Length: 103
Length: 495
Image (cartoon, rainbow over all chains, first blue to last red; front, side, top):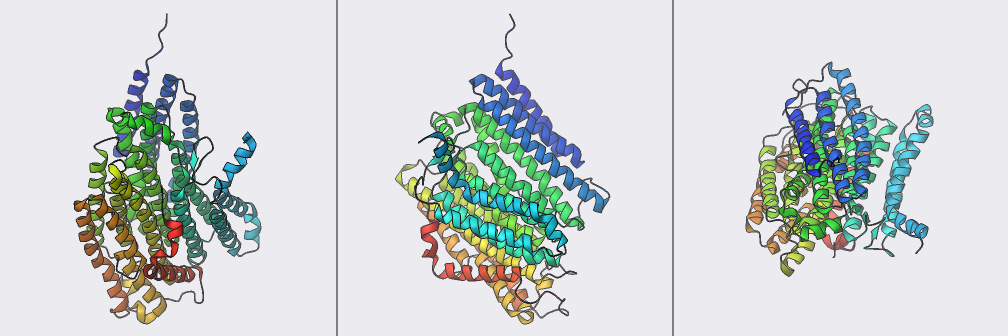
């Protein structure tokens, strides 16, 4: 008999992915990689939603994940557009060199 | 009531948002024709009419179904949502006016700006009505997407792009934190509906590590949007780099949406965890002190107003502490409603003074000169008396000097904190307000008592949109400062 994977395991994986994403945003300096790390954080939340939805026997969790996917797609579109627009004026997108506004 | 008539009845609460989205769609639809005709005043007119229509629909709204939950408990219309939506749409009108002339002068007058502005407002409107964490998240994202695009709207200006990138990266990170918080709260309450979360909280859901982490992440996510310390780093950069019209809009709208969202969330979490009130109190005190302290050193007015926005977020967070005192007896309930009313009034006061101050900067800007430093304002009263005196009025209102609306707002928050019995917060508000007066009065000094440094740059004359924004804001700032009871019927939050 095959036992289903316990929800706690999914949650542990979700926390791990979320921490990887947050760590990446904090340490990486390329905005495209930072954007990917933010996506990682959103997907960690999605994994949690789906796993918890199964745990509660509630389809709401899966529905939430689909909403989040749509939002994430919009976020990527805006983020890449901003990066392209910035590259055209600056010729660089490294966040350490984009510093004409004082920090 | 049958399903479809129920749907129609529920939909009426969303008419203002639909008017905004409709106007936005109309602009995108007729844009090619507007472009061919040369002028672009059409899209400003359409968006202005759209916001006016939304205001009219909102004022008509109270009546049947008031105070009810709609669409299977996902939305709610109550006095808080109506009052804050009134403030939101009013500031939306000023945002359209200020953009009408500023974009033209800066030669970035594209119809898309107005379409994005209206969609962003619709997102904020959705946040005000949210009765479900998912709706709150979707509204927040729709609002923020507009902000990112508007911050980077001056595409040829590298500083604008930089502001957009910084805002986007921190904002998207904050959204991810917020979403993860929602997921954890879903994990302890098996629902994202506020009512069900509230009953789970009453059964001790926030005492589990998962619930506690969820609560902290949700507050952190909203804290980013309102620029609370320690999540404030983006604010000065974005305020300085974004086009002045966009700065004015996002300063007011982000605060309205995120603080009303915070009120709703805190109302749900109140009494569920011992760490909630101390945590908010630390956030409020740190935000008030840091914002006021660092603003003193600024020479760029837009950047100074960015730090001032941090400081004002601190005062509003002090009101949030009182909102979270929900379950501590009858005094707690009184504090709770007083703090909610005070917050909505304060948001109006801040929006008026903010639009006024940014409006003066936009009004003075010309094609070659984007007015934003203290030096640019030297001797303004001699050069252009009306805008000079108006700027002084807005600075006094932001500082909270009596006879301006800013004083009334700050007094209401102070009063709510006093009846909440939190002396530390009350003393911090008083002390940091005195600190804040210094840098606002420095702007007054430059405008009134320094002499002009050079010849005036040529600029638009006559009644411009920005000029109208300044006029309307100055009028309302004075009027509500002297007769604060005028809008009580609209702005009072009752339970």
